[in-house]
Length: 189
Image 1 (tube, one colour):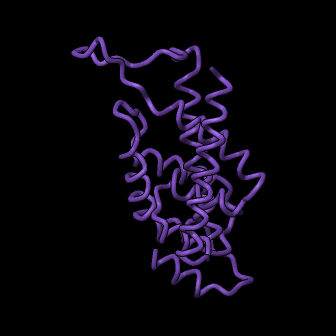
Image 2 (cartoon, helix red, strand yellow):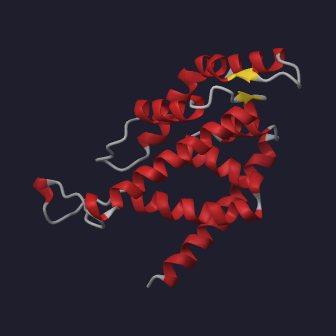
């Protein structure tokens, strides 16, 4: 991330960073973050960390006129791209033509079906969209932490807030999202 900071600092507030230049500098960091995120996914996940980064890269560079004002702008866009990719992947896997609500079963363990995290990603995304309407900055922190896999310290740096504030925001966001998800689960019973 130091390369991004260096390039961002070199560019004045009115200068925008070319997307390709910035992405080349942060590609390895994005791969590390995607790998960390994908490591927490359930076994049987078909989307790989490198594929997640490449798909995010394509989405971020699809518009050649797009420029990044600073690291916060870039990482917010990267977090949003990765979130959308994971949500789209979860929705695709749940679609009726892809088996709908069926669960993958490991052959040696026929009695115990493997529960995938697709439902969890979709539930978190739905609650996060509701939370973003109430508090966009805290929602950005959640996106960076949950969908990109950044630490509290990394997310605080990207958002330009103190680590203490980020920890406070994270605690509040987790509690709010937990209650929202719990209330939704009670409503579905």
